[in-house]
Image (cartoon, one colour):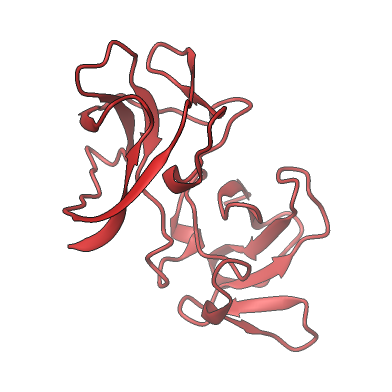
Length: 184
């Protein structure tokens, strides 16, 4: 057991889960760590309606935690006990606790460790433009574009190779989310 955040979103205590298939990105939205939710944020419900977060109270306590997976799905709905509100989307899979996880074996939408979020995982290569993940050997390059992420992007070469213009993985700087694979 480890200390984790237990979330209360004015939906009452969350203790039930509903698994539904998640297929692709949610338009005009992004995954947000529960600890970073704020009053006013909108959460997509199981009936495709938006619910407003009224407030967040975080309590650090020891709990048993499970990384729920059903037939490779890590995305499902949760709702409060005795709540009349619809469940909201949650996603409990990311690679932040897995430094040896290769970006090349992850999927679009997964959150991974980057040179920004975990600088100790990376070695700056000669010339200072590229980084090498010391656990996976993957080569990372800071992009000069921000097409998909307002804070910029990281690019990773495919299959451990150096970055090529048309053969790369794009990762958002703001959240470490894999945005796309080019010519995988």
